Amino acid sequence: MLSIPAWQVARNERVFLQGESGSGKSTLLGLLAGLQLPTLGEIDILGTRMSALGASKRDRFRAKYLGVVFQQFNLIPYLSAVENVLLAAQFGTSDRVGARQRAIELLERVNLPSSLHDRKAAALSIGQQQRVAIVRALINEPSLLLVDEPTSALDHNNRDAFLALLFDVLADMECAMVFVSHDPTIGQLFDRHVRLAELNQVGGRG
Image (cartoon, rainbow, N blue to C red):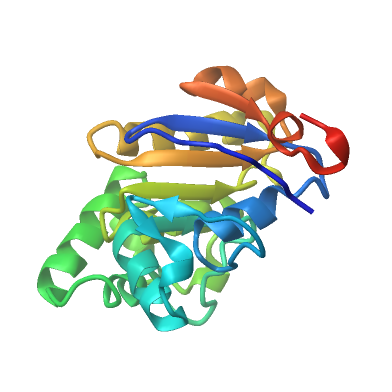
């Protein structure tokens, strides 16, 4: 259960949100993404009150303004890397030609070579799937990126490489980020390091 009286993320800010397993990190991301609604209180994202939107409008809002990288990536295994990205793009733009070109450019920018663009997601390595998931989340040029424990299955070197790529891609985008993890060693790389236990006042904590 979560009880957070007030919390704010600034535009373009990169926030590291630390919490142990079962502490409510994924629940909080689900609330920020509009996948869940609070039972009490309100959540405003980019000036929009999420509880004021119906389910379909929240879906459209998410597609247009938010990017989400799930822990398990949630790629469609029988679609290619490009097809997975374009599936997300069709919910945010009607410019199919422009979306495909942007998808290719972003895939190359995260070091996924053109030889892999048409390979099915199931045939990609974990690291390659991760890069596709990043591009899928960024294809519609979101204002807020939500990232849920994507480095938990990676070793130290691959984790650092993933973060370097992520920061590089975000460097020229006006996109804030909330990055959720239980690993405190990467918190120093972000603009702000927040511990969920300090935000959550359930049971008198915080």
